[in-house]
Length: 469
Image: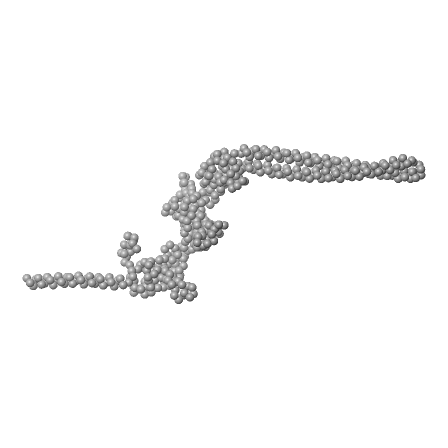
């Protein structure tokens, strides 16, 4: 009985010892394992990378015409509603024309009055010309009389000297000659006066002609304003904005900035205008392909291309601060490819997009096909001690996972990148295993020769399931 009890104790101690040995083995095994840093491992692989610039903005029609009023007054006719389709030349609205009709009537009366004044001025010219002709005839007649009287007086001088005629006859011939000469001078003076009157009449006629032209121009302007009371569609499209109602008064552009009545948009051709940061806008070029996501169509992507890049910043202006602490953006315009949304067009939904809809855009600025790539998180920057004197204080690094469970730091040169991968131009080979995580290890902790061990697949799955990092 004593031997049996002793044998049981031996087996019990042996079992306890075995358990202790297993616990010690597990402890030291885990201890040795924790000597390295747990990391996530990836591979250098070839793929195609599309570098892109992301931006957001609003949808607008490619062609949108703002209709403003050229004249002021009350809207008495409004033939359209917002959303209506209109054709070029269609009557859209009419502003009360009564006041403008009265102005046209006064303008016509003014033109007729100036035409009458011009006719009177031309009549005065003809009268002056007739007077001139009459005075010239009188002058010629007086001149002929002078010649005759001069000859008579010269004969009387000889006869008076011979005593043939009396003193009275001599004095009479001299008086007649002097009177004729005086009449000739008076005729010349009258002719000068008549010439001045003729010139004045001609100037009056010219002034009357200018007055007629002025009143005719005023009348033309008044008729134009009358015609402008009827507003016609300058282009076909859809009334995308209607800012007025029948009975409302509007202000014309003649006095000041006119009231915007409505907008006509070509809804068959839509575009997206986005703000692109100044650090990215130089990467963007005309005709770059794009993917467009519209908030109204969740999960749907539309195609497009860049059609316009602004030369000036969207927030530039006279009052813009010259400090560099503000965000500077440039407007980039993207045309939406109609083929990418034609399936959305139906009889009840002719225009899938509406002005003002929010949209986000990926602009593909560069493509690199079949190039070596690594996940973005695998690339880090470290200080370059040797290059500090050359102002090259950092270099790009990737850590290679070796078979000896250690890491080797390799300097790399990177190229373009997308959301997940970055192109490697030098420093790595296809298929090499690299450290891709955790971020804290890659960015700060890892050094050349550090011991590591790869995270188990089960831990990765567990992390994915529970969302733990």
